[in-house]
Image (cartoon, rainbow, N blue to C red; front, top):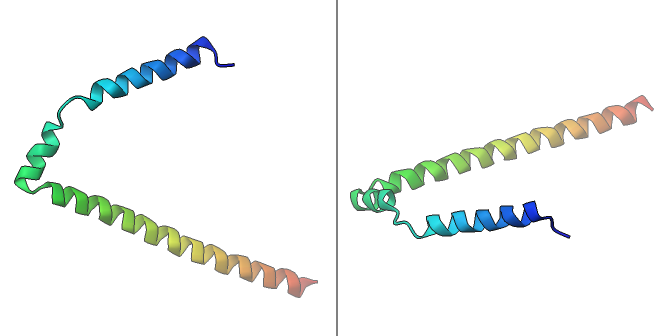
Length: 77
């Protein structure tokens, strides 16, 4: 059963999100009108692409090291 604190936390979070959802995003409108929003989107996409490339390369290196460890374990038996 949910405690009173948990219920109040959910209720407070919901009220906070509802209050902020009704305000107008003035900064986004201004950036869209000046064309700067595309720069922001490009930077975000570039960061995510760089992160994905980094993770892919790290996964490949770990897989290669795991294979080498397996080969070493088999050769020591």
